[in-house]
Image (cartoon, rainbow, N blue to C red; front, side, top):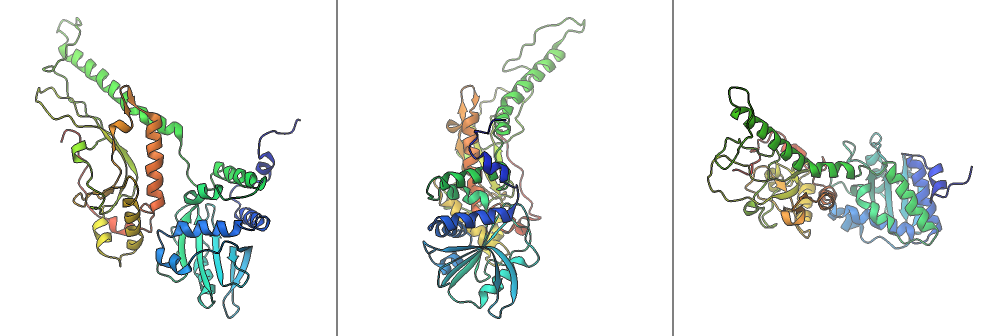
Length: 402
């Protein structure tokens, strides 16, 4: 059998999906081979944690450009008590800087795992901190945001593109990027976008409208058929008997777009899209035509409580996410008078609608861009104050005819 010519075939053969220990050893191996890799890798993680744990990250200070990296290091308190093994320990020669890193590829924390590691930092000297990198948002096991030396947890998908770009000499750089691509393909870094599903979704409106028109035509033909059973072609005009045919996906008029980003309040637990066109009507009443628009929204109906009190669990993370989203270009806007509490970039029809219907490629690009920003902000994380959303009664979405 001829050898495989696929790039990275050997790496793929030895790769074990979901194996955290293997990935830990690989990172340490690359750090041992490339003097600046450890410092650059640690800096990526610290920078990613900055927007949700700014105070703690600022206390840590700048990451030194050259660090040593130890894999699966046993950590102890100042009194020598064993607190377990941390996946990666980044430190300087004199230990005046140390960063503990816990890696998770789909698994959860062990019992009091994060707290035990933090206890080893309480009585030590120098700049120090602990950050976790996880595939999914941890449901349990994380301390309060104001816990000293806790830099928080970040998602692999948030830092993956930056990790790929870390400067490495060849052929090590190519091997590193190939390994990350293999892990991404195996799903170790979390959800990826199904382009086929998005393309299918982008076409559903045209298919739905065609079916609506067909059913309306059949219904009109049935109602107008003579009693003797002979058939006549239906005639539907501005005064015909055609019923309203409204798309089930509601939308927002261009004149009702979200206000300036400065008037921000809060977002949603489920990201969703919306597009619309005005409903047809059998009444010849002039009405202002509403322009279709498209949004990927984060809805947080409890935003008023989270904006008004920093003491609520997750409020600090929520407020940081709100600020970060509002400072993007273009920003995510919010209407504080709307109790549904959504954040969104309103995309006008010129961005995605063509004469023959929605542009699947443009819609896919908008979805990727806006959904990635919402995920990166942390506004959709369960620990960003979701308790405040529970039990909040919200108004239903308005339709294009309202």
